[in-house]
Length: 88
Image 1 (cartoon, rainbow, N blue to C red):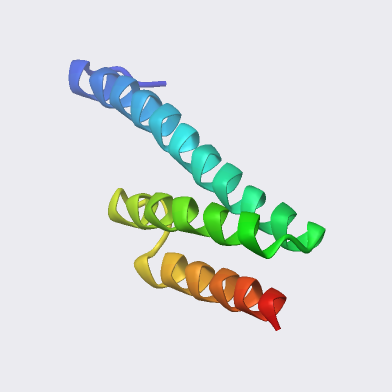
Image 2: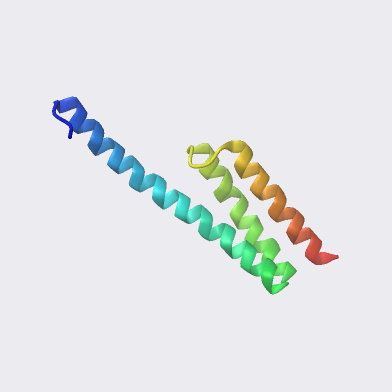
């Protein structure tokens, strides 16, 4: 348990930051899930639209430190490849 004033303030800041990060991570996962559901349904047009919306969300998450930049890029790349494969 925090005893000093500064330690108590840090626990408040950490709790606030954790809540924000949890919200951002959840939002990112929701957009990725929408793309994956469209891919599973086999609807290429809907999947492409969902990917177009999900990509900036993933990059924002990377920019805010929710996921690593390479992790976000890899997710976008793999989703894009799966969407492209639906067209074939």
